[in-house]
Length: 310
Image (spheres, helix red, strand yellow):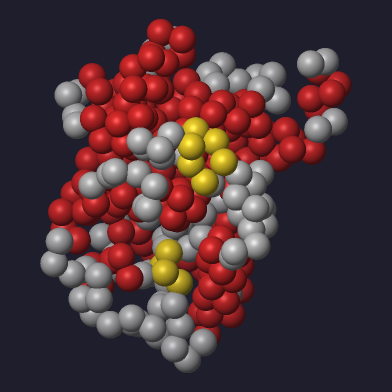
């Protein structure tokens, strides 16, 4: 395809923008984990000052994104998004997991002349890092598929970038202050001043269980709903898919009051997965063709029907 044809394609332009903001969000989370500036008494060192400046710059790149996300992720929107997903009238694309990987690869990365690694290679990097560490086969599969929910932007499951990527959080209760990036921007969200949705526990009760929280709509929740009834995966795998962007919970320790029996195990599972989500991008470039037979077999093990409704 000629370069002009690529750049005039609004779908591919959406893919470039989506991947750019997704990478910027990841950069913020990586730098925040590396600096841990609030807990470091030795922060005056030159190294930590440099790291802090990098963190601030990365935050600036995603601020406009989070301003929109925090204003628009309301209870009303999330109810509507799930109704739209479950609607009998919604035309659901049907393809295999590998075909979905290829579709995301084409929509996101083939349109970006500056990318060095394709989306397919990013997914394989995560899966290979998990495999190399001797983790279970189901966890390798999670590494392979965890970002496939980004296809929602192109399959009618989203209104824009703001409800596809970014850190997630529950709606229907008070937003967790400093545990969420740019907490002040929630002032533009009408739920923040709602007498119920803006209260400490909101529509929930302590100990209700993390699974009963309505998570902000995005690629995590979308993929969870896709695979929940179509894959043979343990609950830990589903938690990794559903909560890998829920940084206020698995990194900052917020929302623990809603946890029920068994949720601590899920929290540890998500924390175990997080390094493979963030840090595997620095690994070597995997060969798609060499790894394809192994992962096709792995996919079939957990998706025996092969063709998935997305």
